Length: 402
Image (cartoon, rainbow, N blue to C red; front, side, top):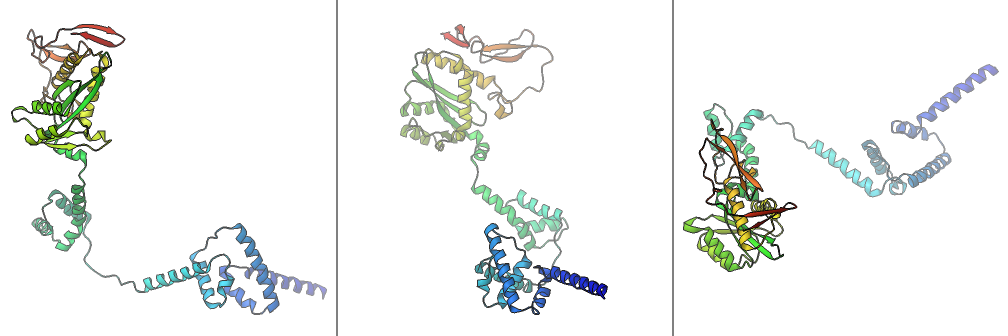
């Protein structure tokens, strides 16, 4: 008998242990736990709720924001809808949060219920045909949808007008936005042959007196058009330089300048008289006149930084020789290594001859060219144009006594 009692007691303990495991708080055993609670006394349920509530208070002090799945939210919303005092029972979430979940669940329910059935329409166009339509719209900006439809019919392709309008809409919108917001670099590239740029370079002579160099350069060919040297640049003097740079109707369509006071009313009158549209660069935007700024930088780095300037005449002769070398002998990266005043390059070296060099700025630079036999090539640096000079070099500085 004792043996049978022990067996029955062990079986009952195993069943109770299994029931306790099944009735632990879990979404999968929520219905079973609720059913088993019907057999328990009211006092026991009250004590169990108090114990669970105290554990939730401890968890709420340590956990900032628990992570809930959509299944957890749905059960909380369902149970809250059946309980009269649901706002007082909530611990880990706020009542407004439960109401928001309730609205989202209804929204999903009605969206799914009111979703229209899949319509059987025309099959979509192939990718290569869509690419062809966009290509025609991009290459022919004046063509409309009907014109493109006619071109497709000519190729044996039948596409409706509304379908073509749908695919060319994005192409036309992007093109119209690009036209409204044309960048400055695109404007310079499209009108480079009709644009000149001017600016001043400030330097100092051997006695630390200020000397200015005024330069005008053509953007398309990078040719230095005009220069002058002065100690006192005024509006009248700058206007006179513009007159001298545009003789016999030679003029650009646009002229880029900065907002310096040296470009005053007199300069504007001369520009209007010669039908030149003056473009002012924005403040603190050196890249707006980048080509002229680059030329002035090259003039300073490749010429003026290596000489002690004695005066205006000395500076004028240095700049004159450098500009002749710049225009007639120096290749430039901006025009694919062409020379500004010699746009055509020889196709290859001559059959006979030798490479000789000619010093520029008393040996600071050299001009290399082919010399065939005993012939002599005429150049801007020929003896008739050379300036006699005596050179004295000390610590990479060259003083020319002219």
